Length: 589
Image (cartoon, rainbow, N blue to C red; front, side, top):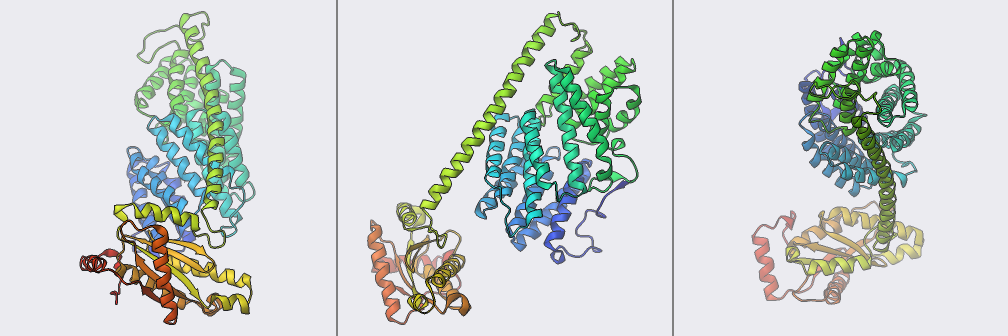
């Protein structure tokens, strides 16, 4: 009986606690169990797993914890990538994951999103584009060497290893084995000190798959001694995986050796020493569910053992059947060639017609095949060079972007600075979609007393707190910039004065409600105006400044609007009557 580490998959089971009652750690652990399950299940079970993961994603989005949401987006996308016919559904999830991780500065998970995009592109036969995505992922990981103190070392290492393994999978699929070996070694290094049985099992099984594919590739260019070494190393790893496999999350039969349950592990023993002794085990595992490229590995191993037992016709039947069933699989292009090459090695083509066996080096077909393989081997070397060049390009591009970002960002508050404000104001003022555009100048009441009575360091802390509070109280597409000193500018695109007053009123109330030890009692005086047609930036900011001083003269902690022309009043009234969604909950008074 197969052992599943979480009883049942239905999170709506009345015997289970509600998802809302479960901890974040439980949700992450549950997702890991389901991902382990979906990769070795039949399609009906895979669909049930996906439904459960979608429920977990909905719950994490309700909670809103950024890292948790990103991890669940990864899980739901990955489940679709490994389920036949559903890979296209992963695209929108990966787009969302990439946007989410960029917005929240989650470098490791952003790299993971690029890696999974690469995997999706391989399935679409877009190999060069997939290589570019992996270059982007590795460039991000190259620049993320230090753990996030809030995340913790073990969680950081696990996320790093996960992202690297997803990169490795694509490199392995593309047959770029030297680069794949470097990446998987780095993944192993990341979790070496904290890995549990499941991580160890995953690492060993991945390396076995890589070594078998690498060995088959080396055989195609006549490097048989090197290929044999890869096969022997894979076999030793298959033996080493037994202990951690017994405690891993993989669905399995309790008390049964791993080589009796996992096709690639059994295949590794057969490649190292093909013999009739492996046939029965390989035949049984050959018919079980698994990745298509793993199925090809098991097929070739079985065919070699049948051939070693003088059962050549059976070996050919196994190979031809696999060639037919794997014709549309793009998950590992080089594996299809390995299958065809194995037929040629036995002297028969995929249609059963006799051909010159590969073992006859003088045949024209053998010479032609050898020349093609040499050319493909050179292309593989070009892929490695392209990967390295693109990886360096992405790193330099990110470095340039960071420098540019610093030039447009206030170092104290993290808000856009005056230069960035000027660019955004210019762009919004020329965009019809942003009209009406409300502009507010915000000044802190009592800030001078903070610096005089306490210290400039505490004054800086107050500026950071107020900047964050102001940003959080406004709409998602509103722009808050530091104008200088204790002044801020707010741009509210698409907001009439009435709606802008409501939004800024929330900001005034939020700052006034801050604990005194954070704000030292500062409040906000806000001057609010609406951009006029053909009005220059300095003119609208001057009017906002004048309105702000009105608020100051009235005692501060309030909003003052510059007098509107009759045309502006009519436009504002129309916007208000139309029920503008930006208007908030209070009417303008």
